[in-house]
Length: 260
Image (cartoon, rainbow, N blue to C red; front, side, top):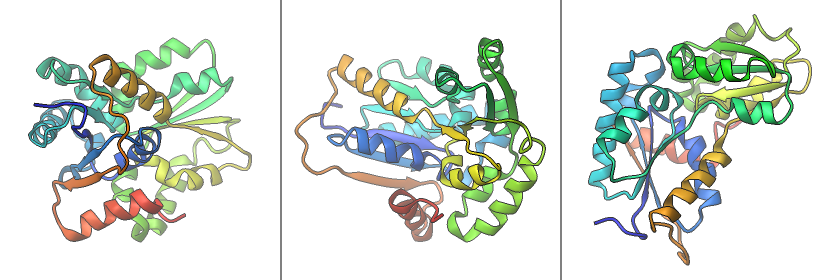
């Protein structure tokens, strides 16, 4: 039986959701967390929607068996492809998802916005509807980034390969007057500095993490599951690629990022 003391589950296709986890743990210091990275099946963003739904459901079953009280889908692709089905399948549990922070960038007054995401996220109707909603307020460039999340899964060891691939992907947009970049995949904040460095002018980055955390806090309060007065936060890491090296990578990314 879950209660206020139960942990919050956070899932991603791999290491990307650890960037979301960093904000969640900072802004909700009284809560414990279990992070599950489905690294054996990463990346989700180049699979079909049905496959993503099945994989995400499997991870949620694993987290529910760990006794979590709420679940954060810290994966833009899984949120877009699977969240409605998962909310229907598990109506007894708050399930939240991260989405491209396009509204955040528009609200900040950005006029030329680049949205970087996985091919599946960029192709789904949910994202297309979001672009249409703001099309009269800003010039929006959508950039699918095949292979980028997969390379970020390597962590610091893949930095040279990440940089070369990023430069190739961004070549069509770096000369545009971009003033804001929406990081529409939770892997991408780990290379935020590299992304900014592609431009010869300053660009602001948007993730939506703080808004997601605030919404989670409200959901927990509404379900009488918000914890307070907890003095020592616990963060547990799990992975479908259950090796010491993979779990050590999770710990390193959580503590220090990718080392830029």
